[in-house]
Image 1 (cartoon, helix red, strand yellow):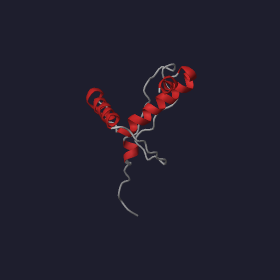
Image 2 (cartoon, rainbow, N blue to C red; image 1 turned 120 degrees about the vertical axis):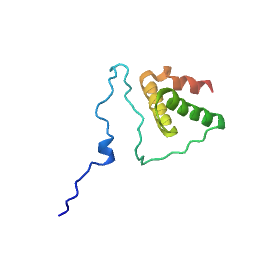
Image 3 (tube, rainbow, N blue to C red; image 1 turned 135 degrees about the horizontal axis):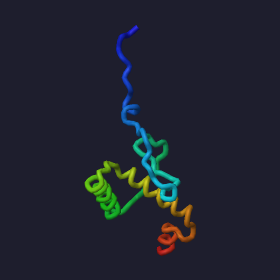
Length: 102
């Protein structure tokens, strides 16, 4: 029998203890997944300008808002927002309107 104490793991130490208070009518139904292992991968090709804009957004989130997130997290949140908008507004959603412009 070992006399070593059992210590909590990192996931227990850094887990969220309370969810932020968000009004029901504002809360989206979908959320981008956070920092976790993802079982599925897709490849998306972007232009140099799009990649630079994404990196600028990531840096702005860090410097201006105190949110240290990676580009994947930004993209997953953006996808969740667009899918919620499509589900809620259908024909009038931003995605449908922008895709029709092209």
